[in-house]
Image 1 (spheres, protein in one colour):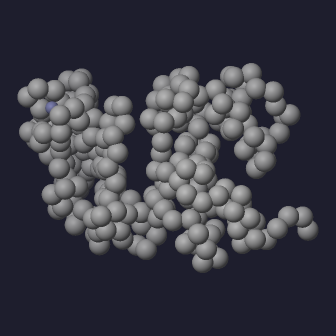
Image 2 (tube, rainbow, N blue to C red):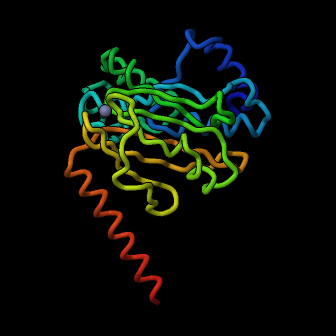
Image 3 (cartoon, protein in one colour):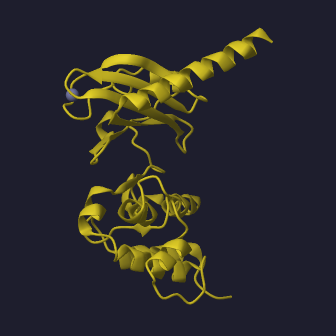
Length: 245
Ligand SMILES: [Zn+2]
């Protein structure tokens, strides 16, 4: 057998990382690695060694923002090829992928790294004091505390608040919160000065079975408002059809 058993390996790894926010920062390809790490640590009752939520850099996202569009997500192999990074033909091997990810990161400008960090919520905020608000260039993100049910989330004034991304004033509700499939909610507001504001709430299940919300707010144009309205109408039509059966 090669290698160390997990608790020993993760212990050594974290000592290597060092302590404190300024000593290290996780950089991953995609959003799943830290969740997986913490899930495995929890299995061994080791999660206290890595308190969350964890701020990290998702290099897959940074690559997209730098070289493509915010929404693209490419395979690591694609990025390596795109940047003409020398490779040994091996992908999906832990060590090789870590090295490639680091090489790709070296192509990303510092200001993009600084302004586009991600937050892993495997260990989600539990209390009001732990709630998270961050402002990125084009949108704001709010991560709520825990609620017992989805209904409690949508009844909360703070979670469902819709403020203008530009000035922070309450936006006038144009489309009230509606749900697409029970996991995502959308709303549109209007600020006299800055125009339309889109709110999106994603309801997430916490490990302990409770629920929490991730809300994003950004400014949008009229065509986007029409799209959201169209989505609401088609959902309503579907529901009515179901109701008639
Ligand atoms: Zn405004």
